[in-house]
Length: 85
Image (cartoon, rainbow, N blue to C red; front, side):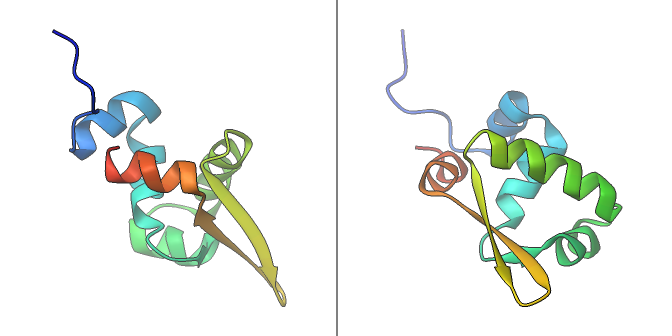
């Protein structure tokens, strides 16, 4: 039987996006820089940058410059995916 809503757990999101991208999408509860996300997740800034580029190309995150820093945030589509519906 088909479900009308996706499962509401991070495991399903990780299965879809891969664990690093899923963790990054969930960590973006508010706007954050690459450096801040790397620190929070305990990974390198270059790894975060790579995954953010993919999430940006797929329309799941947006970016905006704030002075010398680029901030990333979930788009509406990213919000829906992170919420599980």
